[in-house]
Length: 200
Image: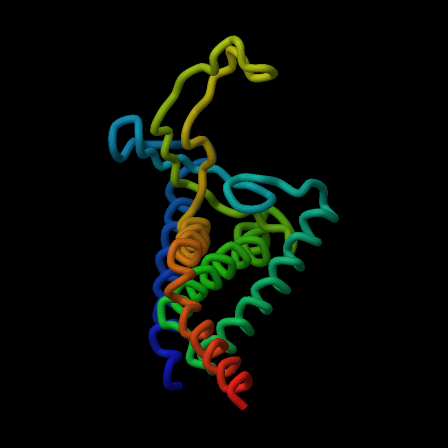
């Protein structure tokens, strides 16, 4: 289990927090209910979606089933990748960030697979993902001269999301920011190997 302790701890804590918050929302709020945490900028708003992260959807009954199955396959792939990274002793930061992505994806799969049956509104694999975190930091209207959207209202940040979505986003963003640190050792190894080949 060497090397697995911290990634597993990250996965456990994210899943625990994500599912605990979703369960509280489902059992204590009605759909569409909201309350303010920090003024107008941070709101708990109970909504559900049938599709992907941040409220995007992949329509229809077949689409929902296909999306749930795709999520399961994707999480299996991410899980295998995480195992590979740990086994081959990749950078600890990369491993923990992939663990964040894995836990976030798994958290939303739990909703999709089980929530419909648990809460009695659908069958297996047709559950709706619970979202609640809403940050309408800035509101206004697009200038009238902008094509298509001119004069329309905009809200930043409009999507309502959950802790699982946040874990995925944080993991991806950190990998993009620190990718040079995460992969520089591999680059050095490749350079050393190539140098040895040239010298021979």
